[in-house]
Picture (cartoon, one colour):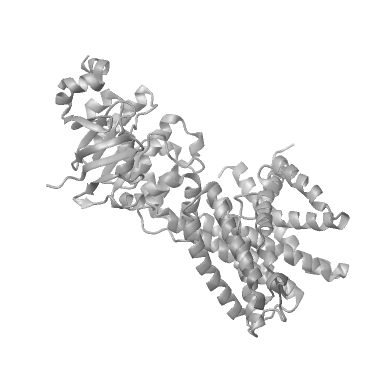
Length: 253
Length: 327
């Protein structure tokens, strides 16, 4: 069976620093594959190569067995790769609804339409409303994004990513900066998405990772030092030494 | 829509209608005062307003600061000059040639320039404009440095631009048509993509938009509006000269936009009116009028953050607010 996503010998160097060091990794359809590792391990660099924002120096990226290593960002998005950013990346000058409408619009044919106002595109708006209702922002449709609280912006970020109807989600620390209640709500949302999308989850919140992940890869200095199910990762002595340490104790408690 | 928002929208319409209505009355007022001078001045104003509105599509809505759009005014002007020099006086042929050449140049230069952004984009657009400036100077058979005199204004069959009044209303008509089209464009799918790219291009690509294609289209539209402005300018002055595409002319367009209000449809019109009238008045007083105009621009830009147009809208809205609230 071909994996939804596979990387083969992925390498990325920044000068003398090896940020990605021969990474082989797969994400199966419907699976949550978490990537954890200390700061500077190359997690965001990995996601940026998968989404196409930076080009690897060596290796290949396959989506459904098809080589997409040379494809630009937008085409990967159209093929079904949706991503969210570690630092919230939305359109601050638009309303909440318009942000999601743009996301829907990207996947609803070309946008060389110069005369008809977007507000008359009922189909786009309907789909955007549905996406917002799912992510719990239905009451904030007309609010300018600049007026949203941090947690709400993270929710919006998620709603936009989902509105592009992706098959593979690349989530770069979706819980970053969220309150406890907010991240619990997001874990619940992600749990409902599990099975419907392949998800590559980069996250520092170990509670969330061990709750959601089917498999966990541990990245240290750009290299995958371990990959396995949560129980195996928790028991791996190398991982404990390199990374988990006290946080593992907290999870076990 | 909240009442306050609606009042702001109304205020915008009021200011735009007053501004354009005022411009529509110019030929009548000019003939009452009895001098062709005013209609010539205001034709120039309307033509530069058109060019500034064109540039503002990418500058205000795409955050692409092109410092070379006078090049497209030059292409329009030379299309009229060169064709007329060879005895082609048909406005339609001139228009078709000008738009075709302008589009090819804009696509090629746009594809190169749009790979850069920020300061690099400003510099590379300036460099291309300077290349065309010196190209025009080197065209010895078309007047070189001295420019090219045009024997007759464009003839559009059903009408000719020979009369100053017809030329004025043609220019104003094109300007109004362009304003209406851009007003629609900004709120269309295309306009949303353009504004999205201004706000966060990286995210636009991650959502699945081929951003270069949309930015290039906007760049070409904006260039073609300037080409048409150049054709009208050549008709007004019966002359096409390299100075039309000098970098100072590109700079003037940017000043008009900033002065009038960036990222508003009608703002550049207000900016063009203000800049060219100020220039006219001040240059009558002293040959060193730049010394006065410079600080005046700085003052206006600093006091009215959204430009003259933004200031007028704000005032009109506040006025309506005061009228609406019961005393």
